[in-house]
Image (tube, rainbow, N blue to C red; front, side):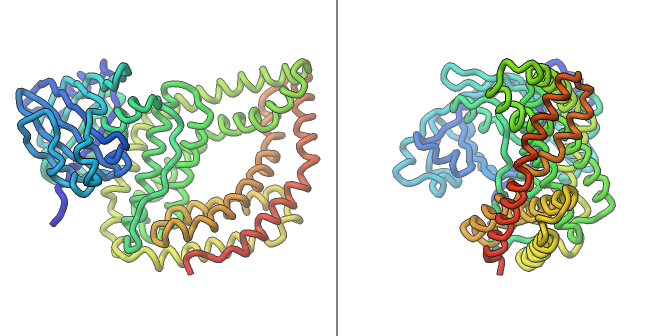
Length: 490
């Protein structure tokens, strides 16, 4: 029996823009109500660990118990009217989610109180519920504001949600978000404010189809893109820039890996937009690496050196300018459109109707991984004699193979992939250090440094270059060790 599903998109929106969203929406019957929700979990956070949430919501004197779990466009949802403020652990999937002894340990974890303006509309042949929520989530003494737009599909095709989202995005800045109210409440209770988000390995079963694997990769990377961009619109954060760039590159790499499965009329446009996003982070990331890897140790060793002081000031000014450029990019209409377009394509694109998408993923994964491994070993077989550009290509090979291995890991089991990915990461790290060194000189040349700062910068690059032969040797040894690791897919 299929699980009941909620098909919904959620957007962050500034409170002052909520009215503009409502004004741009199709006409329909409006309703306004106060919603008070209490979210429950056990002291051991059994529901959170299971990727589920449990709430009791009160509105107009009625109470509804809701359990949600899952990710992506459609989530499993179980709703049941109840008579009391306390949840009933026997309802829905709770008996399976909670250890038997934990069912009596459900306690309030945090509260959500919002004013909801709601409208049911007909749009593109679908019936969609538009909800604008403004309020707060409260956990103990901690409080965080909520200002969101939700689009929930009541009937019709999911593509209509994205079509309506595009129109509303033209009226006001709305940013697609994959963080639920329960996740925001959990972060609040844990005293874990906005922080850089590392993409999660997609969870897939051994019998997954190609479409299911690609969508899982898409969801994990888009979640990371949305979360890191939210942080970067609030404040500069070097790690968030790094993780945003990695997520965009990971999804672009997946597009290449799955090309024969997902290529349709939108494929090139989607790939181009992800390239734009990754490149928007390049300068900021390169400056961050230079500042942290080369400059910081030198300044620590010689804090009063005039040249280093001048160089540090110039690098800091450049970092601030580059960070502002990233903030502008992730706050732009182009970025908002990118999130909607790419998510819509991953979830509802025409590629899903193509025959390969429904095939079993394991044979495809085995062939793809074998091809990428063979290319890495071929391109890297004479690493010590190669120039910087050739070693950079080997680094790209290693990165693409690692992204593919992490994306396909669920088909073969996490334990089977661990040793392989660890050895591959060592190769990637060594080659990454060499690439950072090759990039440093070009980076400094574009900053318009004073003579004093330029001399100090050249001195640091020169000192680091002394280690280059050793680093190349380490990279070659790492690649040799990797070659001895048995491919987990055989």
